[in-house]
Length: 143
Image (cartoon, one colour):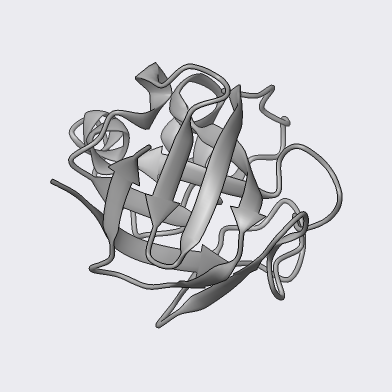
């Protein structure tokens, strides 16, 4: 069973996100208070813990939740393998996968420190179909 490990927000683009106790997702918008929210196809970002673990094994400093600017860090599901259009229920919310991977900008904090970043290859982006609160421990289900 897949579960949420952490939920994170950043006030500015290009920054690492900060873990929160709970985030609120709004339909057709994204995470309330997050710099990446808006009326576009990448309203929310997701990353699997296994993707973080691959890089963690190669570096000597801890990769904390939000390090890759992910809104939701989860365990037990390889989100990068889900086809575009897949739907997920996370807590009270429902998401639709819209993009897998992205172009990494050169000033990425993690790329500068570690020499690599997994988000461009394994990060997943979604739009919010049904809003609600999401927190660590919530189940993640493919619909």
